[in-house]
Amino acid sequence: QVQLQESGPGLVKPSETLSLTCTVSGGSISSYYWSWIRQPPGKGLEWIGYIYYSGSTNYNPSLKSRVTISLDSSKNQFSLKLSSVTAADTAVYFCARGYCSSTSCYSRYFDLWGRGTLVTVSS
Amino acid sequence: QSALTQPASVSGSPGQSITISCTGTSSDIGGYNYVSWYQQDPDKAPKLMIFDVSKRPSEVSNRFSGSKSGNTASLTISGLQAEDEADYYCSSYTSSSTLFGGGTKLTVL
Image 1 (cartoon, rainbow over the protein chains, first blue to last red):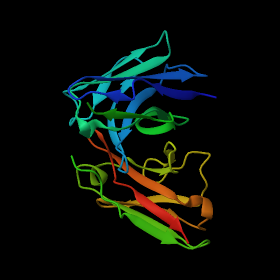
Image 2 (cartoon, each protein chain N blue to C red):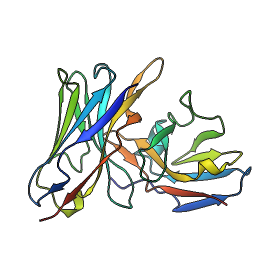
Image 3 (spheres, helix red, strand yellow):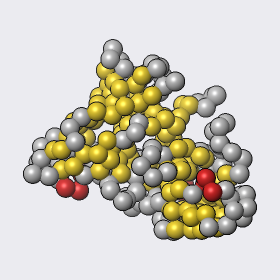
Image 4 (cartoon, rainbow over the protein chains, first blue to last red):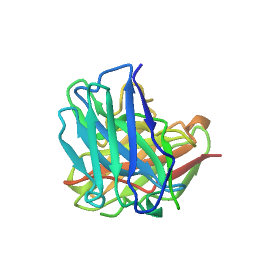
């Protein structure tokens, strides 16, 4: 079955750029929306942004100036870059797939998630 | 944009029904029929339980139901079971983003 796996450094220094990759295995990256969502320790979820398989993107307005999401269909991967990080960016970062029903595909619902990866921002 | 407001915790006994509320504004919950609910077990990824306010993915039990009135959405779990104990998050589409609630911890007594 389709699985998602996040990868990247678990520790990032303040003011540097956080970079994560999500690898999609067991299925194609085509025809879906792909999102990044984060969860600070002990807190709720925060949507970061999505990329459609065509390459179009949409970002959370509160993070938009620092976020870039890109996609490499040849590798079945999509990636997140978050610049100028601070301790407030410490969180478990999830990659997720947009839900497709029998009739429509959605960017706003997420039916398949990676296990999440903890990224700590600290010097 | 602020997160949606959920109670920190709710509890119920096996077999009972419980309802979790999620309050937003006319710019999110009240403005669109695009509310979803997720169940999250400790240290696990969330699972989609409800979308479009009241629709269920095929694999989700019909004990789970969703509704909306004005700026408040609700998730109801009937016939409560021990396995339902988890954190629950609501989410709503807005014109520029997807918002989540702060989460509600459900305890099955």
